[in-house]
Image 1 (cartoon, rainbow, N blue to C red):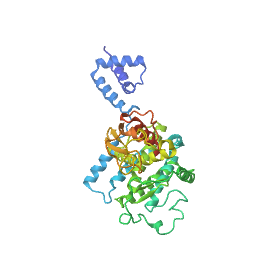
Image 2: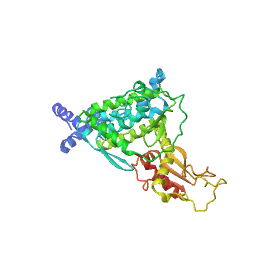
Image 3: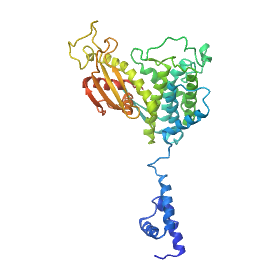
Image 4: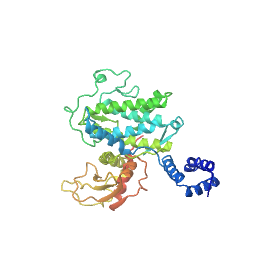
Length: 407
């Protein structure tokens, strides 16, 4: 069909709107008829349609999660860090950076959204700035162990009123003088109210401040922790959370795990995409959770005395060991996905003897699903699990895992 130059320019002026799907159907039909006869406009329309695809809300422009680490690796290959971060501290640096990137993009209305933070004792409802206060309050235990000021006002080693030798000491002596700590020490009952009270105090102290100022303060505190940890690369410093004491290396992985979980909670509240941890970081989180599971199993039995006595899934009168102790049972945990690996979980605590044979059961889970279970973000009775062997033993492990969560 022959058209005038004026008509051609009028149709061409619609190409941008057409690429965005903003042209009324009648005009769109006429334009598409013209594109079939005009190679020049058809080529421009194709370029505009491709460019419009980058603006689709279904395909966010966020950089791939691995890009940050790739850039850092390239930079460090050219110039090694003067004070390298220990391998056990890298997940924390990555997860805090990822959460900070999310929070930088939040607008005023999104800072007012309420995130749901489930744990095995209930659900906390916090705005993003309050989530940062909570993370900083728990990070404060690491700060005190490293000789840094406690970010919580009135806490041990708090910036206001800190006195004595520890007040000015960034990293207390620990690597050469402290005895080796058990990887999962036995502790008493949990004291969740201590964490809740610290969070409330820091939230009250930060009340009325702009959210971005709270974010900047939290980020500075994260950097201080990482720099101080780099001065203690063995990670043997004990960190007392009030309900368990772990080496600094485990405490940093724990903090990375909680930062990831609550970062995802905030992202869900503001409807933002949020990437999972890098596989090598996720594997460290899984390893810590598996090593802490005996404590959760012991806590569950203490709360449910009916679970003591003959081990679940083992008939009364089963043969014991020569020393009179029943042979300890184990469950094999197989993690599927990018963080794949295998672990053996002891079920019966220190009173049981060493295992005499094969695990009583094996279970296969996705790595992210296992972490969500340990954070009490999944129902253990509805989790997709591959099972083989003693199902009662598997149920026992699955129902104990959420007890690793805390407010």
